[in-house]
Amino acid sequence: MRQSRQMSETFRLGLILAISGGFMDAYSYLFRGHVFANAQTGNMLLLGVNLSMQNYGNILRYFSPVVAFTIGIILSDIFRHKSNVEWKLHWRQISVLFEAIILFIVAFVPQNLNLLANSMTSLACGIQVESFRKIHGNGIATTMCIGNLRSGTQNLCNYFMKKEKNYLHTCILYYGIIFCFILGAVLGSVAIKYLQAKSILICSMMLFIVFLIMFVQNIYLEN
Image (cartoon, rainbow, N blue to C red):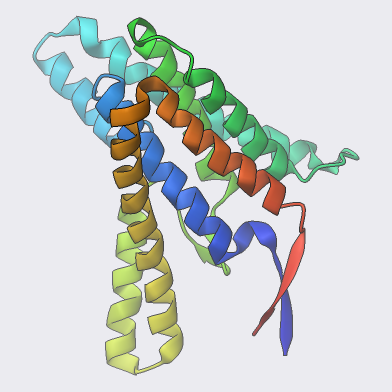
């Protein structure tokens, strides 16, 4: 039996998106002043710590990316709800293209404007996390790992208890995305050493490749 799946939910696309997710977090943390692009829990933690220490000058530094990330989610939903309008592009293509353009601009933002650069990067991350939420029908995030770690481990436990291979396959799927996220962080770290601010252009390029791949609206996979 053959089953049609959206290209946006394929493993190959998820791999690229996960690599870009890790890359963005490494870039914002290592090069843009130790602020997370994706891990808003970390930003909220640092916000709370700085509030407790009365370091009020750092409040906007950590609060702004959280707000930008939220706006990115809102923008993604706007794209989705407007998809009933006759557009030539799928709404997810518009989302990922917009994300690629944002990161292209970030590459040319000087370091004395890190607040702007981090906010723009978090905006792109918010768009991605809301636009791409499934791989092979499983809820998977390509910009963070905690949910993937929980789901992957749960499926691993189910495999050992029930001996059903579908649980093992799903476990590998989740852990594979986590591995790619870490790989993206490694690539981002290495790229920063040589390209500095311009290293984020690599991430922008990856997302543009995703945009091009998505012109194939559906693929057929063996069930």
